[in-house]
Length: 334
Image (cartoon, rainbow, N blue to C red):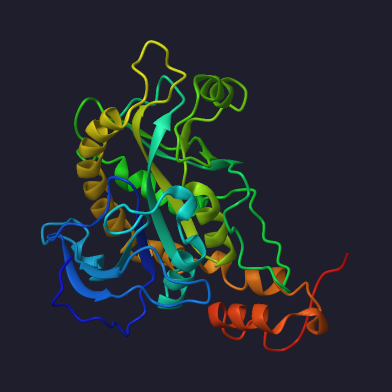
């Protein structure tokens, strides 16, 4: 990470990449570092890492260059700069809050996963469309607590419009390279607590009973918090291994995972460039602005009557959603 860059950035940034295991930074070129923001303080603590602000401009030979502008993006390393944070230790509330405060409304998250389907090979990528939450309930998973109740819809946990853009970008020839790597445009991810890998019995259950496609340790609560924060959020899952259900395969090990992860990281960086190029097009402005989610939380979080709202909860939510809860109105019943 460059240390001679400005530590402030005053322009709004609407797109963020959350890098998971195997994607801890973005290359320059094609991304130009603009600023490195120290982990900003939020009412939920500090995020996992400094936030890098980078600029991307479509290559001069792009067929669509007339519609392309320089795009500013934020990059946050989910597990920290040195991968020092275990899945259950992640400051997910602070991560999402810091990005929203920066102006981010569109988040593309990357995650290393194990495969639960024969057809999802190691080094394949999956743009998942559903989550099964198998965590233990010990991770803070909402911004609405301690005196403010909020209920948001989560039937489709990943933004369909954003996922469609991602699939179009990553599905282009030459983006995924090596060992017949393929893109799967849908599938379910089961999120477990970790940090241990699954037992064989658990893996078979997830595969045969729950019909999950891939398995990770980070989709929850990140996706839930992004929904509360009115973000268009989608996840690209990078297969590193067949999970332990695959008895003809060797037992899952860190060494095996890291081997595939090295290959995946190259494809991930190439994928980010393709995704940002698509999101930079005028036709995708509504997705980048998450226009279809704007104002949702004001209604969902207004269920608590004014006299029942705790000052501390109200202070935190006003920080995250300026103007949303200033009028003392409430909606809902029950």
